[in-house]
Image (cartoon, rainbow, N blue to C red; front, side):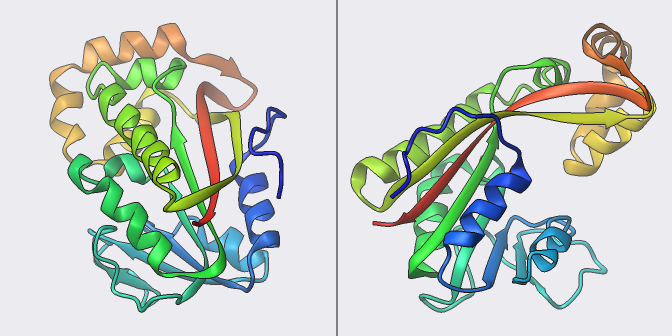
Length: 225
């Protein structure tokens, strides 16, 4: 077993590659997959990708099933690896423990679960908090992970902290993209547009091809307990 506390810098791609290399097979379930943005990496790594989302896009491919994380429509031990990528904190707080238990249920005995969550710190979170302060719900997601480890539902294989860098052409691009993640944000963006644009100007750093906002991330690699 790997050292459960890994402090070296990493990326989401690094974490996915590591977990997949330890998984017993190629079948990967992407929980809360949205429009399937992670599919390309999974397929490039030679694995079989299946997505599930409570509100998939209308033109979603057949590989994406329509279901919530807390009621996965798959048989026990159907997958070798499962991933929550920025998704656990979007599960209703009361259902987070059940969602993690469901992920473990559909994994094979030697499978791997990757949970990648943004921490409630950093420039991107500070700007987003103007319209959508996720501090409490992100903390709830981390607490749910800790509970499942403490209860023995899952084993901690590795934990990684690293910074994600998001690039935006300008403020309008930022506003469009954060609204796409959660349609309910659109009205809040319009109401607080001036304050949001001011926060973006304060916290975003100018890069060679646009504006940059950093977001601290934490990833857990877990195995069935």
